[in-house]
Length: 410
Ligand SMILES: O=C(O)C1=C[C@@H](OP(=O)(O)O)[C@@H](O)[C@H](O)C1
Ligand SMILES: C=C(OP(=O)(O)O)C(=O)O
Image (cartoon, rainbow, N blue to C red; front, side, top):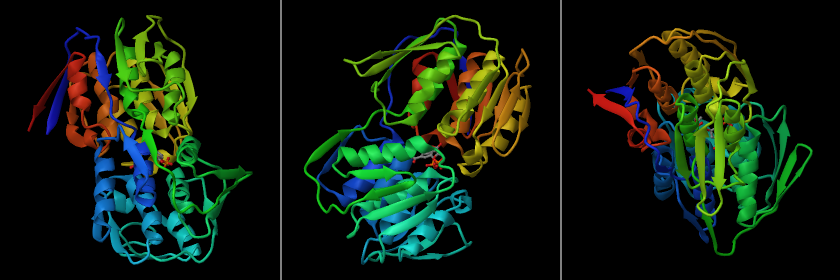
């Protein structure tokens, strides 16, 4: 399927309700399975959350998490210590290329019984759940924060708790903080001392309801649109001033790209508006804390015809696709020059964009969603547009609601 995407040139100012953060939802679902007294509101409607929900209901046999990195990593730790349960945890072709050895090594250090069924270091995995043999573990922190969150989520449910020592430079740090803050909200306290995190055992929590804040990574596409469309404004719900999500840094980052964020505390909404100021300077950003908005920002800069240097992108190579390579190919189709390394991307845009380019999406939701806002400047075609369901099933519907023309063709 291909989506032909254009813009009616009539921006419709309206309100968009985005569903719950997939990162918060997937943490809370694991916690709810361990602590049933937890009630979750505004759960994400993403595919990644649906596959995790289904896995936690099945708890047996083969479990396929498709493209969901958090589900794969969190469930690996979860099933390792679920006594009496044997599962085969697998995923899409790409998931079978996304490394998991660092997490598996740490779980094995604790006594887990995990076997690689195809390639050493990658899913699929056979996991035979058992009680851990030790309550201390080391883990490399410089490849994916999801491995650390996976350990943290199960730590308090273990008979003797867990002390985790992080090795190397910590990447995607806000996601680790999010995990610790959610644990704290349900009454699971941790101590973070130097590079060591400790959690005591807790077998039961009091009744607790948590309302998930809406997904900030999904909001990034509206930041991009508002930056590109002069005079436009949109209200997004339900967002808070104090967010657990690192991607809430969008309001600060996009203030450099002409977007003003106004928070309405009583409505739990944010209104984004374009400040009409012309931007010309080069943008330089280290995105090691906010990897999921790198594609959005690169495309916004192309649309604004401003050069940018994005660094801290080392985790992008092992996500849904190699996002650094995918970005270079697609940005160049539109006429820009792009220089990449294993952890950076430098964009040299041209003042005019090539028209009606077919953007490939590489099974990566964020490729489709990051490029779509550019259709406010030039008509575009997006290959396999339904990849968006991984995190944001209503994406195309919401784009139409604000005045984009989206036509799906087989
Ligand atoms: O813990 C999480 O919810 C996530 C952590 C990040 O991954 P890395 O830690 O692998 O960078 C992020 O890219 C991903 O979308 C969600
Ligand atoms: C990288 C992502 O997800 P995951 O790693 O959980 O598959 C993402 O949503 O951009």
